[in-house]
Image (cartoon, rainbow over all chains, first blue to last red; front, side):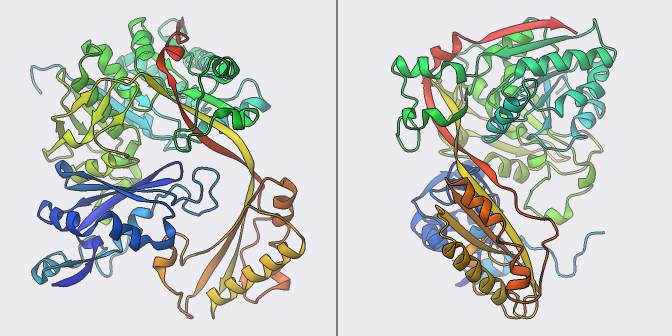
Length: 125
Length: 459
């Protein structure tokens, strides 16, 4: 077993509803959805974000899309125009979650290495 | 698709400020039946309300009128009907400007504008409160009475019925106020296919089509994490088009030859955007179950969407209320190597001490280092001493406007009276902004529905 960041296993998008950020996490490969379900528990996600999320973390499953949806309550400094945050609408909370480390078998870690990241040396044409 | 009638609803704007050329590409790039233009977000209505307070003719998405002047002739020739919530808090003013734009564009006598009103509750609030509608905050449970005198705008999210009626009466361009974003897509579908209010599954499918359409290119390559560096020709990104069949199944695609990419994954990413409980996606016309959505990647920028189920609508409509809630300002300065982050943090300390010595009261002071921790917070860890540069970003919030005003005068002095190697202050003093807080509430639907009006007039 090995620890790898979630960015190699899933893509994600986030948005806001008031002071709550939502993060939808989608497995690149449906075969890895189980790993996400097992390890991305509301408690583990809450612990990952630490002080960034003041309230509860709720989790919803969308097995049809190999996706999980998280509601991070109290994450946006009051939300909307109240917030003083650079990311007041939680647009990039998704990427903060993709930093989270998950434990996977060695062969999975090798198969997904580099996934979700720009290839080394890449530059816009 | 041969033999089966398909209705194509194209998305042309995902918010007020979106790509101005996108609607032009949508009407010129291939066959479509409807163009939906979504201009409204949670905070937009209060911004429009402020604009209208200064100028009674303002209060709608002004970009929409010159846009229509450009595309009106093409829409009339091709029979493309436009459905939009560009009306904001002044749909009548928007419709009037649109009629004028149509005449200057040379479509006078050849097109009709439909105006939908009745979503605006601003003048009805006291009456509603006096009749026992509490309009309590959905999140906190507080009664609206606690902030009544600070309310700036109040609008009900309205559904498809007035859009369907406007289309039935022959409106070629339908202008609404706070229509639900998704209704701009599923309204035309209900009109075309004659779905009854009890067709919950089909209307729910229309809602999903609307959710995919409502953020423009966000489902067709924009803001897309999946191998984003390989997505072609983003400069001319194709906005989405849903090709819907009478049974509610549909294909998400874009015009041939346009940029961007539509795949199962790009559509899935948009589906989870701004989602709450996926089993109960509540709209004015149906409650859609997003866990029922099935996606099939057909290749060549085509994704088939099917299997969607829905449940009956609720007895309530959501109301979006904005109220004045104090003032804020944000100032920035840039610090350079060596020890950029240490300098920025030292400057922040000095600034905070000065604010305190001045006796200024703030509800919150927030400090972020842009280039290090402003997006990932503590997850970013400690900044390295060799960071080439970092931007100090300090924001304050207070009910006391004078305190916020004074804060904006305390940033520039740091250049000569704080840590060294600082620049990036050329933009001048930060601007003081009034905070419009958001108050979501519920209201019994009949209170709104009885007041909805549709008015159709010739250009």
